[in-house]
Length: 136
Image 1 (tube, rainbow, N blue to C red):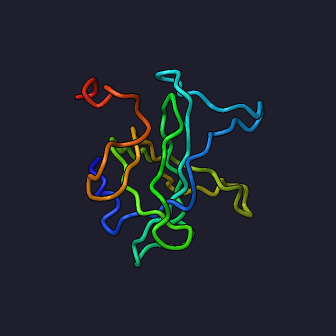
Image 2 (image 1 turned 90 degrees about the horizontal axis):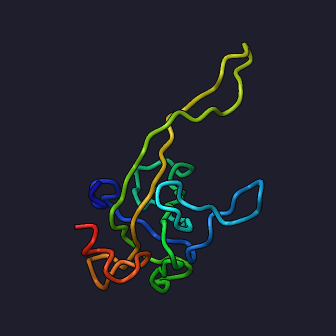
């Protein structure tokens, strides 16, 4: 998916990329498809019409090395764009209604190949050298 289609107002990373930790083993998750370590970048969607709670998003990046997000532009906020963005909808169960039926909502899983400063400046971080050519 094109980054601008998913986030027409942009997103702001709120900190550096961090390992995605398995809740049970307390070890870093590995991507089931390629075996690479999975990192997560917490971002905030800048859409002014968006729901505040839904604006906090985690984007997962599979990479041998930790992706490097740009330096903060103001306060802790770092404008970023993601390359190779995929968005997968799924049904999330959020407990039960008083009648016992499940309370559900549509949620989204965000994955990317790399992260970079907006506007195409620099190479995306999160892929080893040569991976962009291999992906083409």
